[in-house]
Image 1 (cartoon, helix red, strand yellow):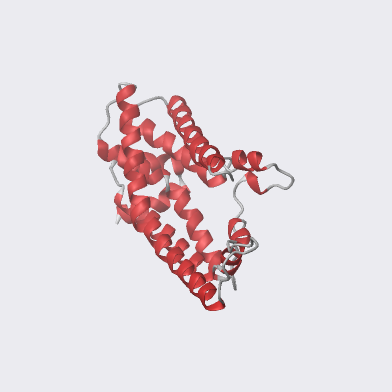
Image 2 (image 1 turned 60 degrees about the vertical axis):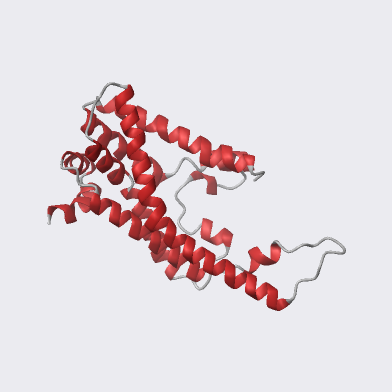
Length: 232
């Protein structure tokens, strides 16, 4: 029963809740909640997403380009919706557990580098608990998306505003930078610092700085580097 209420305790009392979960190596229920919430968010998005604008906007407009029939467009829209549904479920049930495992491995490497040995079970718990705010975000997103009649790409991106990239008048580069200033992500960074400190015995301040550095590296790659490389 304690394992069931542990994730909720993290939201009520982040410090003690995280420390208790890490010390008890309780990673299973936070991981299950994360996977289910992300999958539910993906399903809600796919069921409400109107793929028409995306498909029509990607059609060739050059002179002499082959014409596309309405039946082909309808088939592409249906295929895109199915891919979004499958992708949303896969992200929750496959990608997120693998992400937690990868984060735990990164924490293990950091513990080794700083000569702060810790059990992998505790680091796994620290990683899973740290991503509970992300689970909360996706739960909120799933509820909000369920009440929408339809979602365009732009509306979907602004459905649950949680980062500073939604401010007006920003350049594309600044938008990518400010995507990293996200309430739920920074909340996760704080929990990750507390969890790593508990698992390794590192001072809380140093552990929080380490978690922030890891997040800055992550944001630099996925919010700035890769989108810029793709020409976005």
